[in-house]
Image (tube, rainbow, N blue to C red):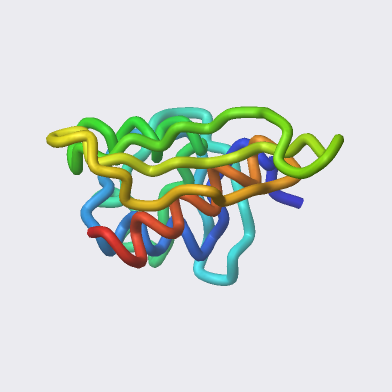
Length: 124
């Protein structure tokens, strides 16, 4: 099972498609098997092998901030009466425009993963 701190196989493929080529220590084989690498790798070096690099959620969010100026804000709070959940707001860093808000999730990692996927599928 893949560590929840890493993006999913599907998100890793989307990241590669959108130009992500940062160095990571994890990758997926074409059959979605997850592996940790003893040294840094990137998508350019994995391309010939048919693999895709697997960044952590935080690495993907940093890439979205630095390259595409999209900020993902995750918080914890009361959503409904006595029901606390993780919420997510996605912002355009250039003008502060809210691109998506009021997404609620049971875990921090789920909130991050869904926000990254939304950005890749709808904003880039």
